[in-house]
Image 1 (spheres, rainbow, N blue to C red):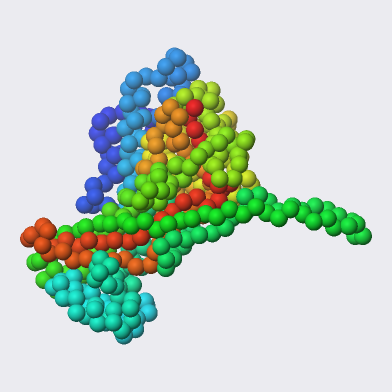
Image 2 (spheres, rainbow, N blue to C red):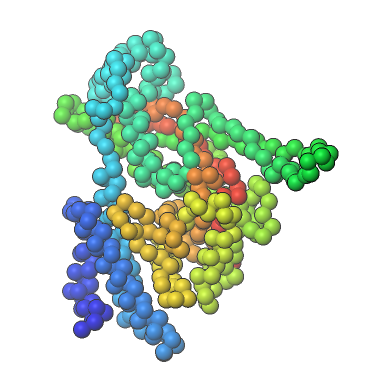
Length: 427
């Protein structure tokens, strides 16, 4: 009996799906999730090989084979999601760790903020404001949270927000960050020992501006929850805002238009990569509207990779949605090896052509003229700016019996090196 035969019945599929993706209430261990992902990918490869053989032999795949491959593909995605969730939970350190440096001002700020959140008493925070001018200000719309909470929220965002995790992040104290960049390489050349040195043209500089926009979330809690001394309000607030912030950031860093939000790397003007100029993002076309080429579809991925300069390829990676990744997962090279490979460890990313793959659900799906695949060194190519300070305003009146916590942070983003990112256009 072949391995393919072992997955012919519905019960066999159920067993595979159960191993690959457990319910959220029982995530299991990272090792279980990793084993489930590996097993699902082996089943996927074997079923896809059968599908390809059917296409070559009968001019079309069997409907049952296609259905079976789709189910295994869904189980593979489920396993990847489960592994990501377990890895993220393990990476979250508890708030207020003993090894974090603490001082009297930090402890005083934390105690005053806790009293403000639980009972609305702002006297302690106002006293800190008078002493240090750093605890927040009522007229500014709330009070700054203790640094322990701010650090934890930013750390969790780095794990949850896919583009933030691979981009450069800079903390600023003002409303915007500016930097000058050269739009061309400086003139240089070889010259003899005694030959004259003519003056060369200086580089042309351009200024890039990254304003910090306001992002908000409004978690709610009952007064009973706030009165419970056992509840860790620091952890509760971080848990409540991390998902809301990461989802908004994930969209803005990809497709944001720069109006009241960061500017995403897909919102910039594009140009054919062969005619690339600074200030625009280079694109490589697939040659087929809304699809990969029918013949040798993986060739355009190689074109995209080698459309990036060698200096950027060393730390480059792919960015795409899970649905696009599902389509690419079927591709093979000339030797019959799959181009997409699952992670080699629980804390590693899947790879495509040897480069890590980052899943960003804000990326568009494959469609006519869509920019569904990005490739580049995002550490050099994209910049996220965080203004210091996470501010909270307590509102016990607007949604009684719930107490609302209007939480804001200021964040911006944009492309800082246009040569470091390339896009695949399905056209």
